[in-house]
Each structure stands twice: as structure tokens, then as C-alpha cells.
Image (cartoon, rainbow, N blue to C red; front, top):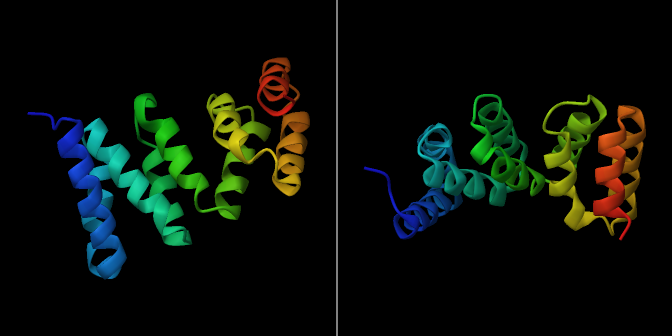
Length: 143
């Protein structure tokens, strides 16, 4: 029986506390939910994203390789909280013309006012050479 929104949010609080107070012994536990039911997976991803460290990013990126499209955007947003390593990952999706390139652009759009990040995104868009990615970039970044 799938958990509802309230139950998923409660699980999210549990994940956050476990990672905050005893990350070393709860890493595997929280990571196991990244491949579970959609609500739980999103909450586990958010908890990892809030950790803002390389271990968190690694867990999210590994989970992204096998997650369904319905949670991939949430995983990318959570990964973006890890800052530079996440930005490098997201711009690589754009640069490599991967199917998630437009989702990566949407994920990075809220930080478009940071000149350094915006410049990295612009270079990735140019490297992609795709008209669709360039159009999405203009729509999202050049308001």
C-alpha cells in the first residue's frame, strides 16, 4: 500500500534526522528508499540534497542512473543543493545532449542570477549545439 503525502513527508523528516544526527550508520538505510515508492524516493532525495556534501551527491547520482522519469527532476533538484559538483553534473547533461538536458536547464534556472553558474550553463548550451536546448536556455535564462 503506497504512502500518502502526509506519510511521505513524515518519512522525509525521519530521513533528515537520521542523516543529521547519525549519517554514518543511516546512509544505507536512507539510500535504500531512493529506489522505492515515488513519494518516499523524493523525500529521501530531498534529505540527501540537504546534506550538501559529496557523499550525498554520489548517492543521488547513482540513484539517478536507475530512477524513473517521474522522480528524476526531483533528484536533480536535490543534487543541485550540493552546489559545485551538482552544477558540473547538470551542465554535463546539457553539454552531452542527454535526454535530461532540458530538465537540467530547468533545475539550474533558479540560480541563473549567479554569474559564474550562468556562464557555465551558457558554455554547456553552446557545446551541445542543439537548437532545442538553445531555445530552452533562452526561455529559462534570458528573461
